[in-house]
Length: 134
Image (cartoon, rainbow, N blue to C red; front, side):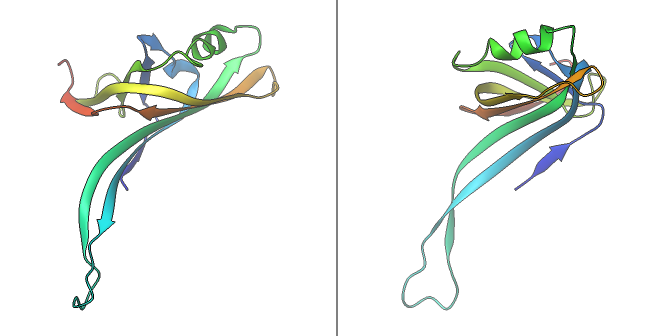
């Protein structure tokens, strides 16, 4: 299961940039497998199935500026959204993009003027990896 988590990541959900308030982004790609072991096999046998991907975002938003909350809350129950993730920031050599559905959203009480938040997105369909600028 490849997991990508980077300090300078840039994240856009439906063209809304939430990178400035995010401090942790994690893209996970899972490849399913089906067991095909038969009685006569000496070792377990598996076949590759379909792939799935998800993105988890965490961060802090200023208590008096609710724009991050407004942006993320708008995706609750809104169906698939365009999601773009630059693991190394917008000046990196590649980006990941695809359609994703928000599966959870959490907001905590303020800590020294900043409210913690977390959002999880489940990819629906293909995740593409393209060169920066494409």
